[in-house]
Length: 436
Ligand code: XUL
Ligand code: CO
Image (cartoon, rainbow, N blue to C red; front, side, top):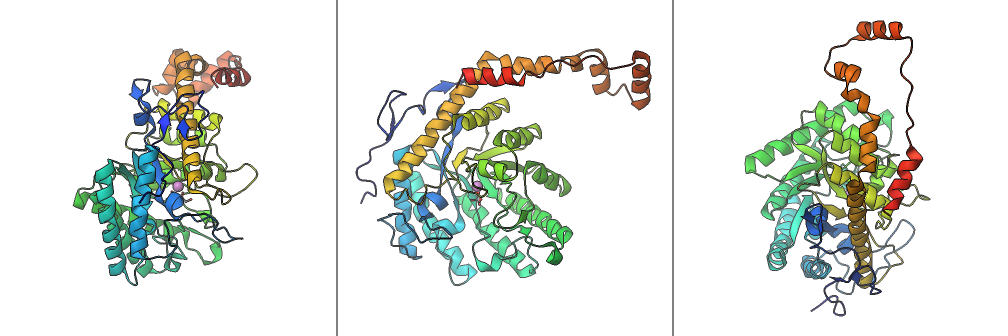
């Protein structure tokens, strides 16, 4: 039985279309910079928000109408949900999805039963993946919802919680491998602290490093070749999260010998919670060779928490795609909609409106970014701005021919540095706007 009987497969109708259930910009076959939009964007739907979100918030009960879901934690309900998820993704036309172990299958009364429940639902997922050709962008383990993780998982002061988390991640990596997942994500749900009076930061960080190294060893042992990703977020649910932003994650990866095994999954709302723009986090990660994938969403400028809204702002999507193109694309990563409909958007069709709008916004952002790159004015300006590093003194400094003494000698002779040139920020902002 269809969960969305009135909705046909969403098709591309072009910018003039007035049909809210059609794409205006996302034409999966359109070629941009030599690659199809489908391959550039690698859209992915998340199981947790889209199929498990119910509209509840800290002030109110569930609101969303999901006629196919009986609201129970039964295995039967979990299996029925899989068919709905794949009908939705097939009609939307996305190539990927992502899930946490506990999104798809209920937790059992002990670990063995939880593993068995996961296997039972994964069997149905496997069949649906085969039927539709939809692939797994990434799997992950939920190490934050159950009360056992109240003090963290890999960073828990309780060693048995570390052991439980390791067992859960082992199973989640095996499951991701079974489903041919192309990445595996670690988001440190409660890997942080609420108060330093009760916290041994050094021990917690060392244990997190130990945990991720065990994951790397296990992946090697079973031949899992998907890319490991860390997803930075500065706070919520903990007051301070260790993986707070791209820079903190990269420092952590270097400190624990993990740089060769991990990249980053950058999420927009996490970037802004950290006091950065998405563009900053992407460029920083890219500059360090760590740009892996993105969780596409947006926060609300008036709210200081992780609202996980669908991104529709062309500035945001164009800036995001500009940096992604700059670093040659997302590789095995994708544009993963870690976003949820508002609790007032109660109908199943709202799931379509939200994804269609954001897919279109990213498609349009991709085209804007490609046009800006084709124009070349911004890139040329940056080249010119640093041009003196390509001749004379700049080359000598960068090739190690100078030290403080030689530089002082030169400046004492010369008296002062050459005059600066304008940064032209406003002109560059205007050039960007030409293509919006
Ligand atoms: C939480 C968040 C997670 C991760 C996966 O803010 O973004 O859903 O993406 O655990
Ligand atoms: Co996320």
